Image (cartoon, rainbow, N blue to C red; front, side):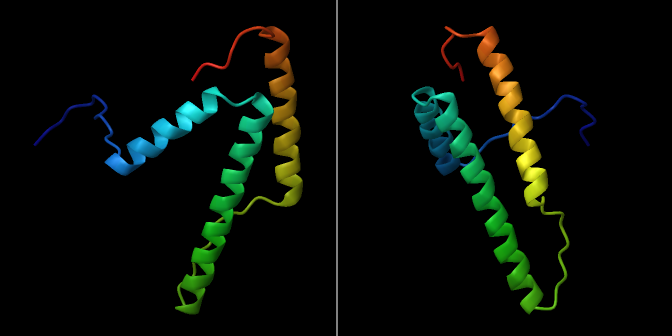
Length: 99
């Protein structure tokens, strides 16, 4: 039995490795606004997938309860991230995006 406290290396399946590399390459060519919009779109897509899964499970009489952020919470998140982004841009005006 292994009692190691060292973190184990996490291996992504090969198809996910390709997807991650492609996303990294695209992200280096994006502006901050494009990257921000892409991340919000991905977040929205995942929320819709969770909602669809919850609906399918409800049809099978399985109750899955998870906290979906409200529009107000999402707007607050956007405002905070824009403020944070503006602060970073003020600090690093000429530095390129590094991933």
